[in-house]
Length: 325
Ligand code: SAM
Image (cartoon, rainbow, N blue to C red; front, top):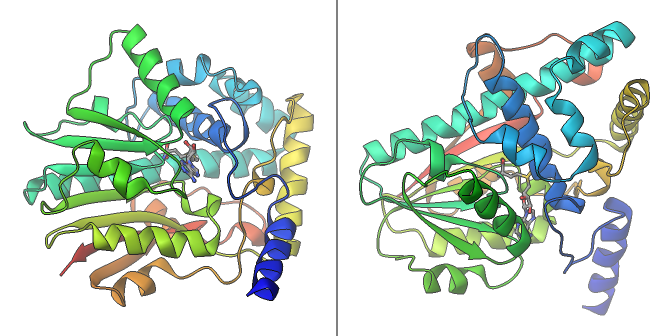
């Protein structure tokens, strides 16, 4: 097993330069700052002429985070500046923003369907700056648990309380790392494993090693009464050459825009070739799961943005939804 441990350590080092098994962060650093990135995309969408989703809290959450470069994405002139500098990068950027809007829309619909089926217990894993506990129309008696690192949760609730925002459900914070004993912390916060639950893992799995992803879904399965539902954004493994090309484009975009690159997302991600396919895993472990390729969902909603580049012809992820049987 020490050989195994060594091997997996070596893999971790090569796959994620900035990560360790017990790393921590706040909203402005490391993995925490990625929550600001996706909230910035929601803010942009909310302010756009025909928004697919509305997140009235995204802008203020991004503006107060102190996460450097992502605040630039709040400027509405950003897209015009990119388009002037480099049309291809502009298309990639537009595709990315549209992807985030479609992703939010998809998982909003997941929760709407779950509460319509009678589920009143919700767990948002790695909730980051997700404001669903404040912006969705939850039926009376719905409890929404949010799990994330302590400083991330602290930032969001303090910021929203400071602006007079009130949760639309019984919102409970579970401040713990998902690589620790979060089921115990969740139960201590009042979670009842006997009741059906709707789970969400959005923008999370790529930040977990493959083994931690398997463990997470094992724990979710153990805690899920019949009638429970789970949804996840599942990412695929990308070849190193593709990652290098994407990194180059990203650096080019940041340089053209004069944005300080204080974090490189690809250094935070575990791009593990052995990661389980979430749909297959769930179907083999007591769930009925289906996957929707993100580009198909973007096309269905007429939000696909063409990018003249072979790396951008298929979807970035699969949106998985499953029911416990
Ligand atoms: N789900 C939110 C959304 O879509 O807006 C946030 C997504 S953000 C890209 C990633 C989030 O995952 C961050 O808030 C980060 O703190 C959280 N996260 C990543 N790994 C985690 C872990 N091991 N334990 C707890 N939270 C984690």
